Each structure stands twice: as structure tokens, then as C-alpha cells.
Length: 287
Image (cartoon, rainbow, N blue to C red; front, side, top):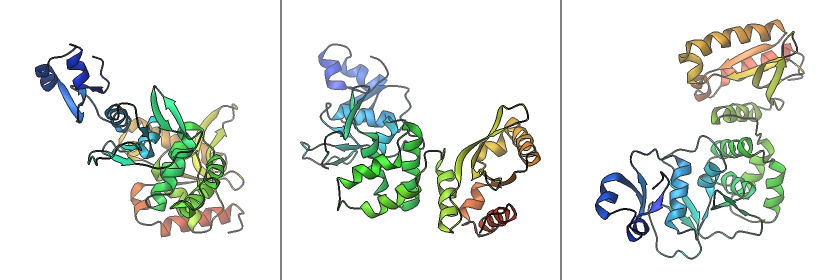
């Protein structure tokens, strides 16, 4: 057996394993769905296991679909989600829905039926808090090159769906250039205080013409860069040394660099917004 989810009953029936081997050497993910120990169960693996549980009859949806499309930041603890019309008995381990899926809203990834990237974004953007919905849609766009406008067209086919107002607001801000939920929340903070919309992943060339930096978000016109520093920026000595050198080079080219920590973002950012506004104003922005 390879290290992918499989049906234990089929493996025993086909003589690939004994029941004793199944109990001893394999981890039960869902009812009759197993993986060889040791194994790491991430969101994508859990989605695959849920599809196996349905015997391929269901469509993987929601964050589970996003994980299969390549989205990062989907928690391994997230309950797998399926759209499965024929399933009637509740099963607490998997979230099973009976949503209507239109033509073109399902595709196949590695043999698994999954909601399309656009349909997945349609579902993600309608649910949960606004900040989390934005981060989810951003991540999916980043992973798949999906454009928010494509999701808007799909939303027009589902007028009146629950959460459609939030979805449309999310799509107005969504940007596939965000590479982490924290960057999405930072961009949302900037939007909420009425500052100009920043660009994402701005390439900066050195004197040799080569790109030496990609700014998380900022404004080329006014040369203001806003950089989110995750934990590795502080704990990795090599990364920290490069951050210092990189900031120096940007400043030599006339950029004002504002570095943001997780703690600053959690505090709500009043002082942070003031710093960004002051930098934009100094650069000539009408703020």
C-alpha cells in the first residue's frame, strides 16, 4: 500500500492486508479510511481521505477544496467539507452539504472531484469573518492565478445566495499578491482607514538592473513600502541580516520602509496607520 488514504475493507478483501495489520500499522482517518503510520495529516490529505470515504461520490468543497488547489494556511485541524447530495446520515467527522453546483463549477484534481477555483472562492468569500474570508480568497488567488473578476461573474449566477453581499465586498479588495493571512489583514487595515490601495509584490531593481527585493505591499509612486515580518524574520539570523541589508538598499533608492510585526497588527494598528499615513504624505500622496 502506498501512503495515501484507502478503504480498509477493500484492502482486506483483496488480500493486501490482514485485519491485524490494518489495526497495527495503519491510522484510521475516517470510518473505514486509513493511512500507513507514521503519517502527517494536513488539510489536503484530510480532503483526499474524505473523498475516499465518499467512494468518489462527493465533491470536495470549501477550505478542503482550496487546499487541493494549492492554498496555503489551511489548518490541518479544519474539518473536511464535501458536497454530497446522496448522503443522508449525518457524520460528525466531515461537514457534508447539499449545495447546488452549476455546470463548470466542478473539476478533477489527481482523480478527485473538487469545486473549481472560482466556485471555491465563491464559497469561501461568503462565510466567516470578513478578514478571514479575504485571507482565504487571497490565498486561493495566489495559488491558482484566479482573478476576482472571474468570481464576480460566477456570483452573478447565484444572486440571492447567503453571504453574497460580503463576497462582493471581499472581491473588491482581494489580491492574489498577498502571500500570507497577515499580509491580507494588513492590506485590509489600510483599506479600512481610507488610504490609497497599495500594490502587492512590488519588484525593485538594483543598480545592476537585477531584482533584489519584492516588497509585500506599498506604493511605487510615493516610494513607501510596508513589510510584514513573520516569526522567521526575527528568529533566523541569516534572514535578519538580509532584512537589514535589504532595507538599507531600499532606503538608498529613496524608499521609506515600514516594518510591521504580528504584535503591531494584533493591537489594531492606530500608531501603525499613522506611520503609514505620514510616510505617504511625506512622499507627496494626497492623504
